[in-house]
Image 1 (tube, rainbow, N blue to C red):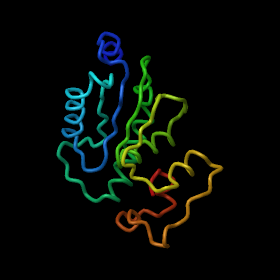
Image 2: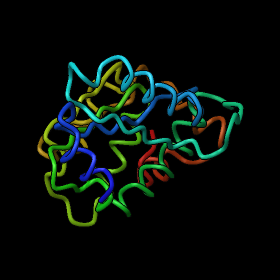
Image 3: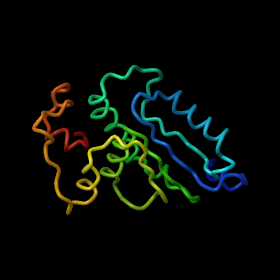
Length: 172
């Protein structure tokens, strides 16, 4: 309600932009990006920038790219999917996912209980994604993924999680 009130009472803002950050961004940096965006660009863009931090531990060191992508990003996506109503506003709303935030977005979409159009726009910036990631997951009729160069997935090697289980849970 507070977000919708801000948009309806602030003449400079007419749209909400949720931002799901990428890898190696702690909560402080995520919120500072939002603050700096609002200071420098709110007047010209009309966006109310709201950071969505999926790394819940302040200043936690990042372990490994593949491990984080196949654990924390999946957990965050499932959590956000379960509370998708929080993103449904009565004002225009968009989503920007940066880098590994695209993996979080993918898991949100895969786990939405009642999928519907929530965002006017989805911006996938510096997407951390295989070329076929969204075509195979969001469009079952698209050609299916194949193993790249026959190499074992790094997450399976690091975590000891079989590839089938990773795929079932949104990883890979």
